Amino acid sequence: MSPVFELRAARYRYPDGRFGLAETSLTVTEGESLVVVGANASGKSTLISLLGGLALPTSGSVIAFGTELTDAALEDGEFARSFRQRVGVLFQDTDAMLFSPTVRDEIAFGPLQLDLPADEVRRRVQDTIALLGLGDVSEQAPHLLSGGEQKKVALGAMLAVSPEVLLLDEPTANMDPRFQRWFVEFAVQLHRAGKTLVTATHDLHIVEEIGDRVIVLGEDHRVAAEGRPHGILTNLGLLLSVNLVHQHAHIHDGELHIHPHAHLHGHEHEHEGR
Image 1 (tube, one colour):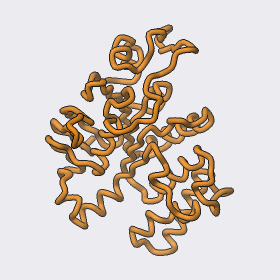
Image 2 (cartoon, one colour):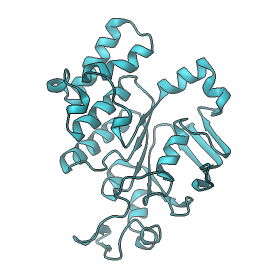
Image 3 (cartoon, helix red, strand yellow):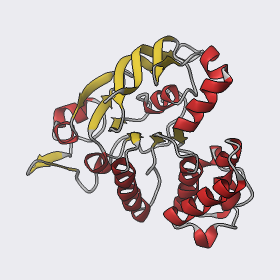
């Protein structure tokens, strides 16, 4: 499969000198579901921002669909329009995405920016609302909905544009078990439909179900390991070294088990320097 993204010795440094991501080279191929795991502040969100063209590397390069993401490229109307249509980003904090007066308006916003015919916009909105089961709240204000419903609305706003690539930043963080199960099943459906997924998460419980390949970021903001989900999740030494599990975790019958009183690291909301 052809590459969708290529990071070539890309690094990102904040103005105060701290690294968001150390020198990183990786490729995301068309149609794969890549999961990026790491503890709080390891660089997961920074990586999503670089892939989504929301930040540019301090050094090195990020290539998307064969074109380097630069200020000039993203200011080029034709490329920018194509890139924003092909790549959707779901932020961890949905407050950064939801601003319209109703759920229906929120989902319609993206298609309207594409200058689609009115009938096509209505069709996309209706299909998306039905897909996500948002019919009962379609005329409500997004900010009045539950956390899980808000996350679905944000997903709907992204999906209505029909992107080829979905960049998902901590999609299950602070969500209840029902939403977490729903998301896993939905992500699997999207992948089967041919979408390319990059999911940044500290939730190890969803990794094997949604991922073809896993990249592990260490606390030094570098790639510590890469491999298939099962191999990563059964490498207890690796998970301990990158601060993803407590010492109480253990491997039994080829599966990762975490002591009931132990918690995965990284549940705190990630702030600057992620």
